Amino acid sequence: MEIQYSELPNKNIADFLIVTATEIETQAVLNRFQSICAEGLLHICKDNRKYTAGVFGGYNAVHCQCKNMGTQEV
Image (cartoon, rainbow, N blue to C red; front, side, top):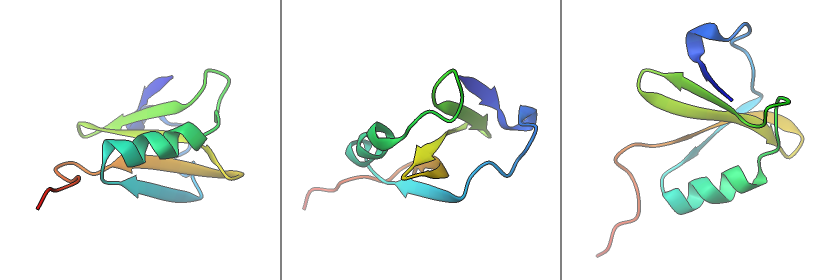
């Protein structure tokens, strides 16, 4: 389910935030998320960013992936 941040009835929806830098990290985290609502994970859009809300380890959590970050080859 996707929703705009401004449409959230309660802005305090998470116990903590998880931030990842790479797509591999993002997929690893999201694979462990459990649904927060009947429709599945909640995707929240705000300022051209996408956040995912779900249950992680028994706690309500929100995830986002950093822009312009990732692995670097030396």
